[in-house]
Length: 208
Length: 208
Length: 208
Image (cartoon, rainbow over all chains, first blue to last red; front, top):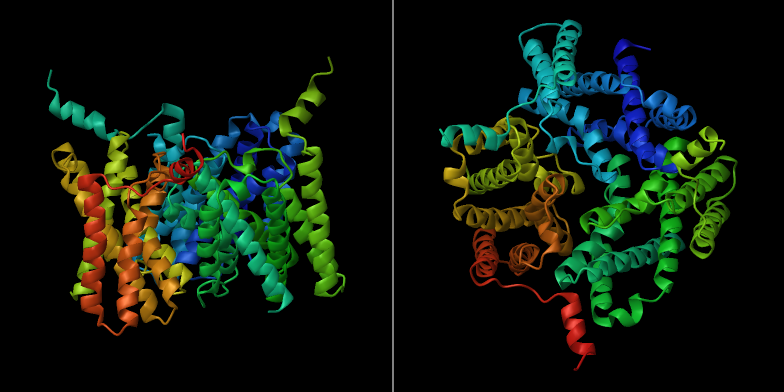
């Protein structure tokens, strides 16, 4: 399996697990485990492929869907022994930035302009998780100030910038993934957040 | 009209009615009646067609949209005399499994693999109702343990399995629809549910 | 720039601003400002293009996305001095009916039937705002009785009707935009609402 496809499957497993865990938190059944796992894992890439008019990446074979279903089954069987572990948030961070770079790379390779490639990277990395949260009635990561979307912008943006400057895909991808992961990791370890709108505003307008 | 198309229109009417009723529960206007009816009825098939890159089934003619609008009008005019009736839940069950088999059949006929066809069946049967619930701010059927998605898995799964084993579409479809409907019907009559995650887990981990 | 494209960019700016303001209300960061602005501004046209199998309007160049990002930045920088102003609701009303006519015109020009063109006009005008509200956890405009969707039906419907009667695009568009804007404006000034379902029903069934 080529490295990019391997990375893509790794991302599927990670996001499918996070979807299944969202289902676990609400006492869902095995069917919802599979449903949430699949939506979370393939959601971002699906929207990207629809928007850039590429064949949707998971409809040509049984592999991606099978991966999601098996991952959901494993989360169901292994249970809390595994998913309570803090390791998952870190796997999620890996998947987030990996999908961001993969999404930007695919879009750029098809000849779309730079800003569109960055947007597709952001979508590929974040969309599945957003839908997962809406369906599970959880407060969306979008409504917090945690650095999450920002990490995908950094990953996809750096990859696109470096590619446009002539760097090969592999080093550009490694740099993009590393930078985004460092940022997301810093947010997880040190609680980094971006400043919110009203905070800034309050600072400006209330000198007292 | 051929039987499959007839079944498809019957499903549209049923789901459109359920969408209009969701609007009715919240004192909505006639415009929202039409909006909810249409989204619920065509939502699942629309997503399926986008994913398998088929022309979206309702954009070629005025028939499907017209059906939704007229159904919404009828629900508005007939009012509670009709929609309070328990018959609607049963019509919804018919539509659910019929759309599941129709979705799987269309996907299989276009040459996609088995697991993808099952997934498309599930999507075709359930997506419209999911969007309806999100828009209407209702607790999604996805968050309950009622047998709903499961019925579409059984219907679409049996159809795909039997088709792959060489059975003709008509008997495979009848068996798929019947099995899924029996399961959903049993859930409605006897309150069948799937076990939730924590229940199982609690049983395993707390012997006292 | 031709008049239709100019109108389209004006609509993008208006909707992007409304998305950024939804983010501002919740103390979001600059990243969410850009995210909400973009989703709100391009959401409706994106769904329309997917459904009628046209290339998605914003992926061919950097212009539309760049417009959204810059608008979000301006809202962030200018702050409450601008967006508290009542003028925004009026700009939103302009965008709503302009997008409705633009969406219907594009669909009709590609040879789709009348009812489909009206539906696409409604989607183009309203979808972005619906997604914005779902993501921002706000009560959807769909759940109120304010005249909003109705204005897009009037705008798109009049345009399609007049076009089918042989009127040229420009006068048909001006009439459609004006009628929808007058209706939406009346709703804003005079609080016009459509009657809700239970109200009517209560009048009918409770003579006391």
